[in-house]
Amino acid sequence: MTNYAIAASSTPVPPSIRPWRIMLVVVLTAIADWLLFGQQVGISLALFVFAVAAGILVANRGETDFPATLVCGGFLVTAVLPLIEDVNVMTALSAAFGLGGFALATTAALRGDLKDRLVAVGWMLLSGPFRIFPDLPLLRTWLRERGLAAAAPILKGWIVPLVVGAIFVALFAAANPLIADWFANLPIKDWLGQIDGKRLLFWVIVFPILWGIVPACGRWILWPDVVDPAVAMLRPVALPDRLFDETAIRRSLVLFNLLFAVQTAMDVNYLWRGAALPNGMSYASYAHRGAYPLIVTALLAAVFVIIAMRPGSQAERSPTLRMLVFLWIGQNVLLVASSMLRLHLYVATYQLTYWRVAAFIWMLLVAAGLILIVARIVSYHSNAWMVSANLAMLVFTIWICGFINFPFLVASYNVEHAADFAASGQSIDLCYIVELGPQAIPALDRYANVTTKPLPNFVRDRRNQLAATHLHEGANWRAWTFRGWRLTRYLQGSRPPS
Image (cartoon, rainbow, N blue to C red; front, side, top):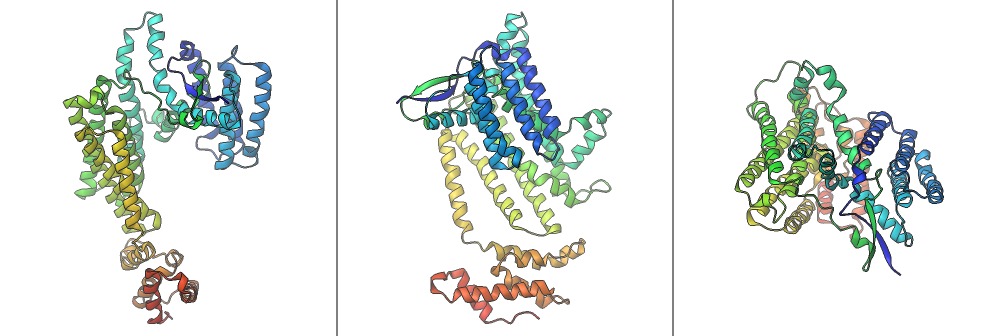
């Protein structure tokens, strides 16, 4: 039996770029903003799915089959019913598949058995958001038809720098309270208050997703796949060289280096040199806001470099662009180092946890990944080499972490810095330490021996319960581990705190 899979057409039909279709996607994005952004999501998500389905019918009117629309509408309602019952990952996936199937089945003759159709819908949902990149050059065709082609090269060269630059500015504003305050104090702060960084990021994410689903007419074709439909899901979505040409990449790198230089200079001044922060702002608050958004910024920067400096491209061979990339990656590595310092300052005030240890490890992996990008560009290796190197590094990191006693590490750090926490107005969280498990018992006993206050009854009882359970389970030779054996020796030679 011939298998069919969905593929993005390499020559999309020009009407898909018509202005009224663009405005329809903008309207649907605004509806998503109204229903979902900053709201407690419930029935609003189901209503948004139905609004997108209506938009699909409007955008592709004249190309849909009425009987098929009725059948697919019933399938969509069935897929959305779990979402009405409750909003979670599984019900959202059900609604997404229902919407993807509705879009394809009403605008393309989707055929094949159930497996083929599921693969086709899955491929559309995965690749759909990236369809905006090959569709952007169609704007030049539309402008040429109206005698406005002269503006197309200028627009083309600034799309990537301005769009991605706006994302970085939004992330910096979310990460750095000083930048956020600067925006808030601008003369147009009331207008900027309505277009905050999080809302801008919401629009940047939602618009491409809707663009890949709503104007489906002429955008997806069926091919007979002689191997397996799953192979089709690995076909990359081509990024047009015209959008990522040397001019656009050069402008992007110059703009990004300038943006990152501002953030880097502020981090060097306030974090590394210890300059005084404005009144009312603590180092803990300055550090906490930036630790995680700046890591997202570094990851986005890495994705951009991988796309822009793809092997064999003109940008990869340009000495000027390579220098700008190396400078920018260097700033990103310094950004990751600043994020680690921010997290350290925050932990010094609000204690260490599992997730904060994981964040430290993740930041090290991001920094190493950035360095591997430089190695790939210098050595002219392929992206496959870089992916393999990152996977090898990830496997090695997981292997090393297997030897680290994280419960003991977290508990010991918090016990050793209990006095520092008290000086900053925070008391040590004994309940969290005792819930780390038996391996936290030595650190908890050490705290009980140096503190002047007895342990709370709950903490003491929980400690003794964990110790008894560990000794009982350790009596079974099948449960022996070297780490567990060391703890058993400790428990047998120590006395429970009073």
